[in-house]
Image 1 (tube, helix red, strand yellow):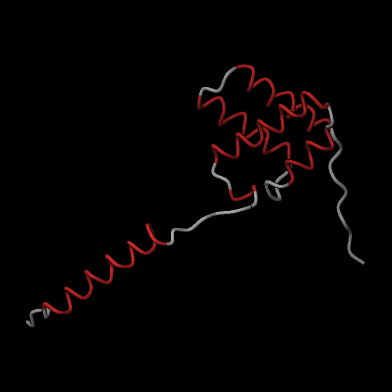
Image 2 (spheres, rainbow, N blue to C red):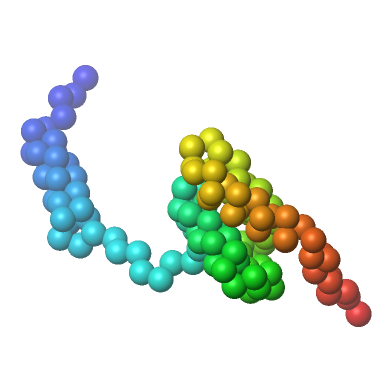
Length: 119
């Protein structure tokens, strides 16, 4: 069995250390203007809650639907239901859960979007 040369081990350790220092300290990744569909569940719920609070003030369901469309291909009402579930699990205030519930009810009252047919 061959013993690994100490130069190789020292080189690997220095390479990993240099890479970590460069990646974490010198030039860390900065996320700028990311799309809402890449948000974690907690931030996603906060986004839906902000849309719900804006809907409560503006009473514009179509605008709320457009804002929630940025969360991905799922129906906006499904995003609202998921937000309600997460908010209930995490102990959000009753006022916040009620705002989310009102948004979900409003979104479910809309007719489903028309599908684009083929030729």
